[in-house]
Length: 427
Ligand code: ADP
Image 1: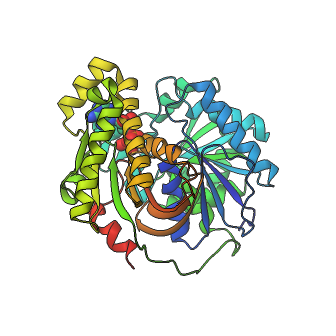
Image 2: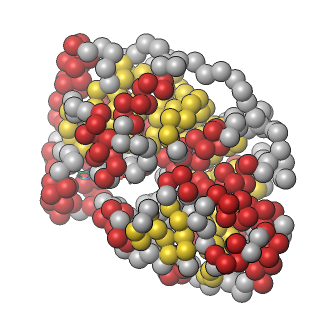
């Protein structure tokens, strides 16, 4: 058991929310800080702190600087146990930030080793012999191979991380994990590489890794939401809460979809119809026009259905996505859509009374929360594995209205999430 408070440094905001949802589920008070925190102080309730950065697709130097700034913020508040949260599908650009950030945090914290696994059983991500599976398939055979920004075409994580680091990368095999925590700790201690990826298939494996890690000299621990939850399960009673949460009341409900993932597309199909779509080429040509058109459609929709959630989605036609990326380049196409969705969110909150926002997509969530000036979300209720509502103030809007916000990674949540999220909010 370890009573030291853990600070999580996540490479995107939905990854932060994934961790936060699971920590909330095991009874912790959880705050998600969006972006490198300003001077703001840490709530003094012993709860978990999860910092959601936007470093997954950032240039390497920015990813490193922001991660170090987040670590320094934690260190100044007495938190020296850091968890490097990356995607459970190891999403990263070819130049990669998982390796460089790990090395920077190791140097800053004085850690000789990094140990981690993206295994996240609640999302059906497992690692065996260093290969990452999404359900029954290798990640490279899953829809993640076609991600618009971070296509994962190599399932061998030792190789992927090896390309991103200057230090050797080693693997701790599943048989060592299954040998139990003492043997596992010994295997980690005697491994020759400073970066170690660990096989894991289920919660039992993650619990063994959590126990083994506590027996080691302090090291940088990293991975998906799975391992941090296993570590938190072992923590003492500090930071627990049984406070009741309020039901969502008043205000318009808005679903914003920037993710093009298979799961999100299925959620839109179940939770639609779509009120307005955003086209990348049109948004790049005249963003203001695209935003004004969407806001007009929203106003009309909410006049007719004030209590129904409206859906604004990036075009989900995969051929259109491909053509937009070809015409504009992947980055510009993505940014045009993100900027338009962010401006639509801001306009909806400022002028149309939107107070409940469900946002699908990691990059999209980062762009939208930044435009709204939301710096912190206190988690309220978990809706699905890795998916939870939180409350935060929109600092970019006069009066800083309180918003209920749910940020979810593209592939997260059941197919009926866009329906159930509102049912959960009403209780
Ligand atoms: P996920 O969580 O599924 O990875 P993200 O929001 O992180 O979702 O990433 C999806 C990216 O794809 C965003 O940058 C978004 O703007 C971009 N995108 C989505 N649909 C389109 C489209 N039709 N044309 C161009 N870019 C798109």
